[in-house]
Amino acid sequence: MVRPTAIGLTVPLSRAKDLTPLASALHVLGTRPRLETLQALMDGPKLTAQLPARVDELRMLEEIGVVTSQLVDRQLAWTLCPNALERVADSLTG
Image (cartoon, rainbow, N blue to C red; front, side):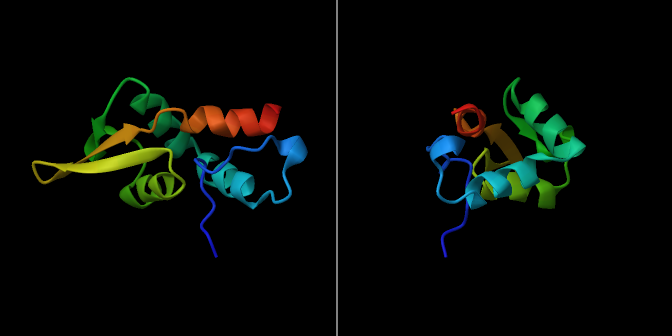
């Protein structure tokens, strides 16, 4: 089975045959630390210690395709993926 991802949300909700990708993305995005993390990443890449979400929560965001990580001097730097949040919003507004 293919993992649902925010990047895969390309069909408006009104035409979707399967709501699993949207449900998965909303579930992952739906906690305060994760939302605060996304807000912080809108200002640019941040190290793990600079973000409110725990590493396991950051990995969840990475799994649905809204952030990426890169090892920088033995620390993970996190970056918001371009257009990922817009795809989630576009799926809802159709």
